[in-house]
Amino acid sequence: MKTFIALFRGINIGGHHLLPMKALAAVLQDLGATRVTTCIQSGNAVFRSASRNSGVFAERLTREIGKRHGFEPHVLIIEPQTLARVIAENPFPDALRDPVTLHVGFLADAPGNPDLAKLSRLKKDSERYHLGDGVFYMHLPEGVGRSKLAAGAEKALGVPMTGRNWKTLCKLMQLVNAS
Image (cartoon, rainbow, N blue to C red):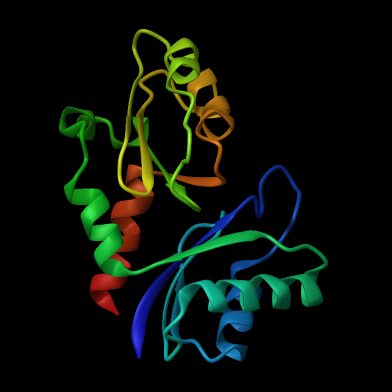
């Protein structure tokens, strides 16, 4: 059994695609996951599974949620070492003074032709970003909700992305370490 982290995109946001974490845990368990722990209502889970192919498991999970709840969320499943690497490679360590301003977008694929000029145009003077290996780091001191960079990053990168703030990433790492 291996430990995995599931990052769901677009559930329980603004009253749309409602999926209680208890129901999410039940779906994971019905697919053979054990030691399922969820983290905040926007869709994060740490679990153990015998599955060796996280992409296939993510597809099964998406389909099963569709059958039970009427929508198919995008889900990205990563391994603990990926999360640890993302945390260790933070290009903005000074942003940790206010960790809710630091965000990481986990990319579904490597961007083939990211529009870096567009990213530069979208960014405010106070904002910073860095395209890493499978992730897009953003330091957004004025908040994610007011950021054109955060709103336009996925389109500029050309690949699906699901974002988490730094506090959530650290909480997920704590759950991994406790499992």
